[in-house]
Image (cartoon, rainbow, N blue to C red; front, top):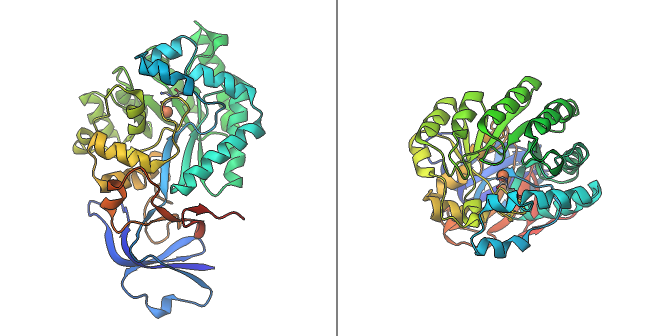
Length: 412
Ligand code: NIG
Ligand code: FE
């Protein structure tokens, strides 16, 4: 079955160019799951054939499927118990150092079976899909021991086959030091590099490796050591960098040839220049800034002015950003970091595609790319960001198939 979207008030193509790529009164023709043609006004009759489903998108805005390029999708439990501590001003790192935070989610994750983790994550994937996300990056890092990390990565691999959303997997054993290695970070790093990473790569369980490089977690030197080992094994690199304390994590990302550096609230001017020069994508997580309650956001404008490619993601996790909804991240990016609606949409489409190495297949509305699209019930681009706190999605199209209609999942 082919699909045509016609009469769209606006199509935001998000092509990788400086022009804004907005088509008014446009159409998109989809064949075999791919974008076959894009145009303005009436569809030439030679492009239509009998077996075609037609969507009239009058009054609506079409964008590429949203890409959530930084999530901690697979985990057990929840952490609403931390809310009161946060309200009384207990810092995030202090909660972690007292055995809570990430470590409390590690305990909850270790208790669940693979099937239980899949059931919980499936609910999250469904929430993502109805809000317009068609591809998601998913990090491990709440198991830390061999069996639980592998269980989480296997769960992600199986979900990828069972759910319309495409999942890109990242091994993030370097998320915290587990209790069994307390005061022995060297022992934990050797365990990851010798026992876990070879298994992950050999079994196709993780394409990327990520590290929480932060004071009290993994130092810059430790991060560089792990990144070099990972690179030698064939992982592509990501890093949680300069989130709380400025440690020069962005500089390290550039030096190691990482595909992305993420968070970056405390990035230095030098780090920004290095990222621009080395083509490291900055993945910013303004929902986390909001949730940390420090009033501090990453300097998005400075990064954009210095030529850094800026992507945006949820950071969906149970501690610092429990939301699957990229539309709420649009609000924080605009009102917290002063990004424009076009920068925001590109940050969740083409720039996010670069951040996970998928820019050739997804992230823009271009002939030959996958027909992953969102139709918002909004007359123009600005409206999507302006009217906040609601779900604007009318339809989601994944690989050319309508998977969400009138904001509801289509169940097969
Ligand atoms: O990206 N910063 C480190 N890791 C996650 C939070 C994990 C947690 O608190 O559970 C993040 O914000
Ligand atoms: Fe994160």
